[in-house]
Length: 166
Image 1 (spheres, rainbow, N blue to C red):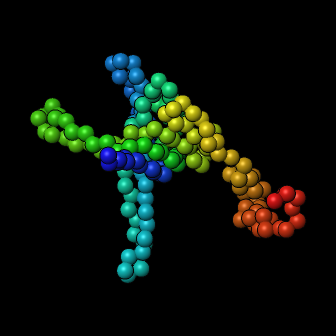
Image 2: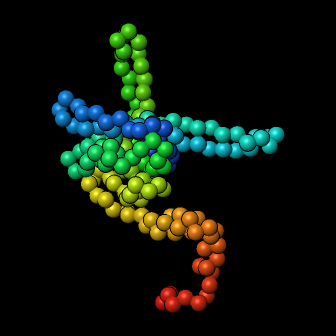
Image 3: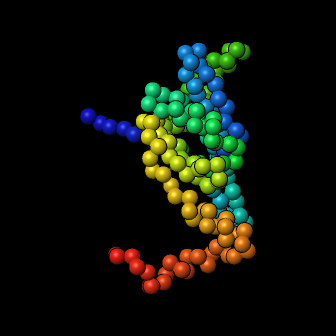
């Protein structure tokens, strides 16, 4: 038997605040656009950039309230990691035109960067694992406030005078 895989992993920034809706059955769904960008130098050495926009859909499920988390914590401009599957839909609009949509059905989301409690992972299985430490980012902002250069910090890691047992 042949197996297949439909898995999408994206890291990008929200283009607008998420839209939250409720279905007629009472289920909640969040939708948002996620921008991913890449840049390169063309043959003449000019810097080029291309941004792709991804429509993401997040559902509350029996084991997870991921749409509620998106509503509460995710805002325009936030950098997030999403993992899910790609889905293609087609429908006929009110004018009889066939419309197509490509969506990312998100099953895991991690808030990256930013202050509002970002850094926690939330997945559709209800977990809140893979907690990310915010210490380096807090240290960076504290160093910047004190007028010190945070870039000097990694040099301290090279010191041989530590008391780590390994």
